[in-house]
Image (tube, rainbow, N blue to C red):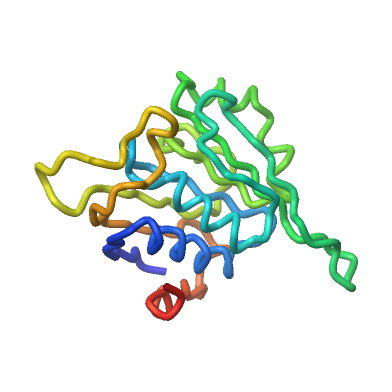
Length: 185
């Protein structure tokens, strides 16, 4: 799958993008999010959590480093439980070894794992992953989204450029449902 780049103008659109991505995410999938403070990483994760149907609220895990959000729905008639969401934040970690100490890989088989600030640290968790970079679409505009309560929550309505790169065989032939994103808003 080639890289996908799109502009997301609002927090509602970022959550809609997350819900859209959740439709193709399965237990064992890894999503690595990169972007500055207030970029919208947690907001995107909130949408993923909504789409997966997990227990919330989903907030930035900066101070607890990782949270597990179990599915709300019981196992399907197939006996397969919907995946949980493991939401981690590598911002305060200094190395991949510190991330390894969290034992996130023990949860990855039964969960969708989202790691904020994971670039350069979390790639070893899975050979197959989505790498998502979120950046301001306008250069030189101060980010109004930063707040004391959750500096990574996208509260400002500043457009962002979101680049999605699929890595590994898991994503070969998978079409991300981004064309229908406008219909979900």
